[in-house]
Each structure stands twice: as C-alpha cells, then as structure tokens.
Image (cartoon, rainbow, N blue to C red; front, top):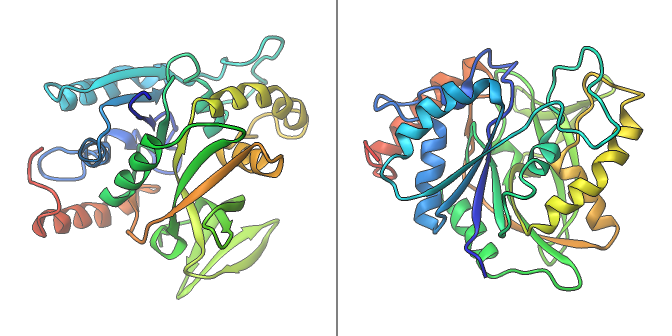
Length: 303
C-alpha cells in the first residue's frame, strides 16, 4: 500500500481576514500555521504533501513555502483550484469570483493524488494527536465493498472565535463511532456562554460538546472520483439559484455517500483546541497560543 499523503487546501480568498492569511507569520521565528501542521504531520509519518492554491497567489505562496520546506526531504506537489476548472459544457457565470468550494478543491487533485490521503485547511491548527490518528487510520485502510473514510472530530466549544461566525460541519455519530450525518453550518457564533448557529435568520443553540468537522478528513482516491461524478449535478442544481456564491462542499459529498450506503466514516475523536485566523482580529490570540505551546516544550523555537 502506498504511504498516505497530506493535502493542504490553501486556495481560499481570505475575504473575511483581509489578506493572504495562509502565509501570515504567527511567531517571532517567522513560522506560519502550515509549518506547525507539517511539523506534526512529519512526526506522524507523512512524507508526501500536495498544496491546493490559486495561480494568482503562487508566487507569494511559494516564495514562503519553498524556503520553509527546503532541506526537509519531503515530496511536494502543487495543484491549482481555478474558477474555470469546470466540466465540459459549463462556463463561469458573470460576476463569479468565489471559489467553487472544498469538494471542488479536492477534485483538482484528481490525477495527482493516487494514495490514501488526509486533507486539512492551511489556516487551521489541528494539534499533533490529530495527525497521528489520521495517519494510523490511512496506513491501515483500503476500500472493499464500501469506501472507508475517517474524520477527526472536534468539540465545537474548542473551534469557535469571538471575532465572528465560522463554518463547521456539525456531526452525528452512532454507538460504534461511525459518522451518521454531517450538516454544513456556515454561521456558528458565540454569544456570552452560548454557542449558536444561524439559519434563515433564526438562531439555534449548539451544545458545547457537539462534534464538528474542521476539514481534517482521511480518504481513499475513490473520494476524488466521486467528486468528479457529482460536480455536474451540483452545478445543474445550484447555478440557476445562486450562480455567484454556491459552493460544492466536501462534507456534502461525504453525506451523500453515507446516505447511499457507498461509504462509511470512522470518527476519530480529538479533544485538542483549534487555533485559526478566520478574522484578522484572531491573530493576536493565535500568536499567544503558539508562544505558550513553545514555552511548554510542545514545539522547538526553530524547526
């Protein structure tokens, strides 16, 4: 079996953050969040990395990443998520600027990634335990009569920011720790000691220990083929309704495959705290968090 790969989604526009947050420094040594994820991933066993970026950020992104990866002995590839990467017969709607979403980002890896793989967001910190769990799962999984996937689940209370709302996949699992349902909630926020999500203008409470996805998944290459098969249907259903902003979400494809009985998804519970820079105002807290992790010996000053 091929060694598992790590796919890092770094093509997001960063509209809420106000800049290229994927390469924003978060410590005095010049590290960015991706550096911490790669450090943890390498310790877990990963050696092959694929970055999903946009061509318009390639120069700035690679100027930073190539220097940070130099001499580490890793295999690194780049793929590009572009608006015009559409099936034959489809075109970009007038006024569309927003990327097509996380499932489309992974679809761009078809033909490049051909091993079991984990996927993460570039601007999220997941913690070392998460990479150990997902690597061990991928190292020992293969498809048979079903696709066998995994997801590292976090408690929603450990994944929110007081600076604004965030998007999370809200999950349900059965007594065997298998994912039964995931619903993408695009507006999860904090109000005092309450956590809520907003849908159609109405706020609903979320229990603090609710399991959510932070887009740390483990897939076999079959997932990429399913994205390719399902993307045209998504476009047919959503372009007439929301041509400028509809998104092909990674969890939506997972949910469909579970419902159809084509896949099962093992939930790997992780109680670590997430850190990320959804908003520019988040950065101060993230910098302080990494300073604390270093002071406790979790990470060396330079790596």
